[in-house]
Length: 169
Image 1 (tube, rainbow, N blue to C red):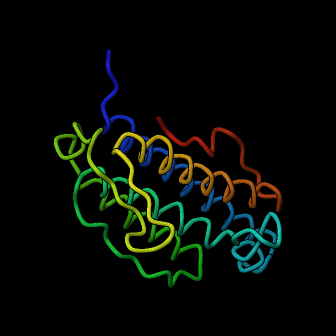
Image 2 (cartoon, rainbow, N blue to C red; image 1 turned 45 degrees about the vertical axis):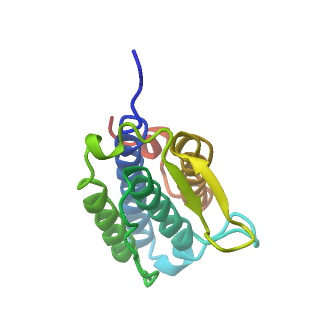
Image 3 (tube, helix red, strand yellow; image 1 turned 90 degrees about the vertical axis):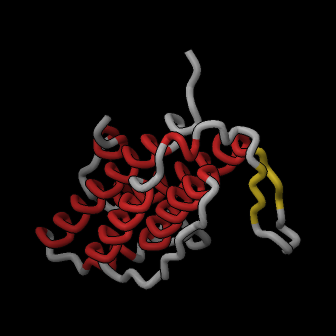
């Protein structure tokens, strides 16, 4: 049995974004029940040179939408980074999911050899095949940022576990 590019991407992004949404809901409830300023969590970092929670979520959503779009051969939608609250982050995840849900298996399957160019015209320009872009670049980055968001919240006392991180499947 073969695994299609669609099966290896969109359902995984949807599952993990669902888990991230659930973790954020628990974080918001945690802050409210303990009378913690939500910004204490939204601006929390694992280490000073790492992104804060807010940015981790933005970047995770960005990877989900941009990887999906590129392997589907469609334009990557542009989302402004204006989120400042848990509600804003939930809206960004919903907007990302809404976009991903517009993509079909027919658009993505067969994209293993599609030429993917990242950061065109810059010194960081890189060319990938669709499969390499998905499996060696996009997914690792996406998982890094979703894991970092989870770890920030867990480190700050939010009662979440592996089941919350993984989401529904």
